[in-house]
Structure formats: structure tokens, C-alpha cells
Length: 273
Image (cartoon, rainbow, N blue to C red; front, side, top):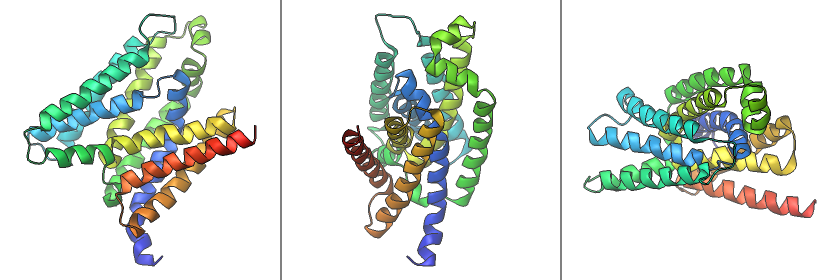
């Protein structure tokens, strides 16, 4: 591979590493909570906000569009925080998340139906255009996610407790509603920014697949993080390279590669039981 190609792919590879870093950690929380599709739902809400801004004539890459999308996402995050309940109940939170995703998806289709660029906008929201990110995108995303990472690290014990041991957190008089709101708000901020550069499907893949593979082979948080980060690193390298060499859609290529890695991990885990 020539130096020119490496230079071209480097910003995309860096943004993939940044996504891997924070999404694997958040994925462990999401899977432990049993709300795997909350990422898809929030990502779709973010996409709905971006679609509304698009139809209002706001520039796709502008700060106003990002603000509208973030506002939609934070409303969704507040709803998910308010509807979590560790007690047994008739309606599980996953059902609320699923309905939210379906409604958001349908609303996007309705809003873009009469637009001449509606189909292209939907495709961009789903798979993104990560191959064409700029160094400005990389630095902005890194700065934002660094702040969120420091916040989660500082309060990691509380966040891990409400995700892994909610009954213990409740027994210790920890405010589940408050910490759930803080978790989902920071999570929504990450999702909004990630969807902007990577699209809904790729964001979901970075969040869930490396974390699942990590949980297949390790019971500790550190082990899951190490394995998940390694999976994200490998997927980013091979996915971007394959996309460039074979002229394939980058986001879709990475999503499929994540699926292949998950399948291989499942087979390996089955044989090493």
C-alpha cells in the first residue's frame, strides 16, 4: 500500500479508533442493562433530528443541525432514563425502545418522502460517509469524547454499579433516576456525534459487536475492554482497507466485517468450551 493511500485513509482510521475507544466501554453498559437496541433507537432519534434540520434548510455539516439533532437525542435519553425500572413490570424497557426506534424510522421516511434528495439522505444516515472525514472532524470528536471519557472515569464506580448491580445501588440509596439520566445524556451526546460521522448501522456495530465478543471470552471489565478494543482495531484496519481496494461502501463494509468477526468468535468460543 502506497504512502498516498495511507495518508488518505489515516483520518478515517483515526476516527474509527476513537469510536472504538468509547463505544466498547458504553457497549458493556448497554449489554449489561439488557437494552441492546437503545443505541439504535437513540441513533435513529438523532437521525430524525438531523432530517428535520435538513428539511428546514439548515446546512448538513453546520452547528445548527447538530444542535437540533442533539436536542432530539437528549429528549429520547430522558425518556429512556425515566422508563427504566429494576422491579418486575408488565412492559419491559426494551419494548419502549423498540417502539421508539420504529416511530423514528417511520417519521424519517415520511419527512423525506417528498424530498428530491430523500433517498440519499436516508442512506447517509444509515451508513454514513466515514471514508471522507476530515482532520477537523477527528480532532473535534476526540476532544468531545475525551471530556465524556474523563466524566465516566471519575464516576465509573457509580455508573458500573447502576448498570451491573442496580439492586445494590438501590440498597445503597444511590439515585438510579439521576445516574440513569446522566448516563443516557452522555450516551446520547456520543451517539449524536457518532451518527454524524459514521451513520446509524456502523455506530451500532461499534457499540455492540466488540463488547459481545469481549464478554464471550472474559468475565472482567478490563478483559472485556481489552478484547473489545482489539476487535475494533482489527475491524477498522481490514474494513477500511477492503473498502478502498475493492471500491465498496465503507460503512456497509465495516458492518459486514463486524458480523463476520462475531460469527468467528462464536465458533471459536463453541470449540473452546
